Amino acid sequence: MMSTATDKTATPAAPPPTPEKKVISKKEIEITAAAAEEIAKQRAKRNTPDAIIRIGVRGGGCTGFTYVFEWAEQLRPTDHKFEAYGVAVVVDPKSLVYLGGMQLDFVRGMMGHGFKFNNPNAKGACGCGESVNF
View (cartoon, rainbow, N blue to C red):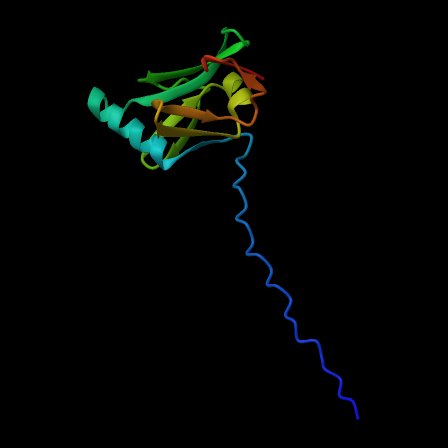
């Protein structure tokens, strides 16, 4: 009598699910913890506890637009304010069209450090990194 063996090879386990990338609403701007820490540090250095960072875009540069990143002492009536980690940034309505859905980060690396606009709306940037096109 012949016995039949059953196939006991195990199927490989499914890989763990990859974490989904957070999608930022087109009406919002995300501030990372690293960006907030640097904003707070610079605000303290300036001794302006109520100052807020204004970000935006202006026409110009070699690819059409340049990013605006400056201190604001007062809000304008039409500004949109985004807060995280104890700091805030403000954006005017026209700039929000181009910046909505982006993440403001602060990066350190071998080539230096600075704020980084992780902007899904940008179609390209110039080689010098000072201007962007949409």
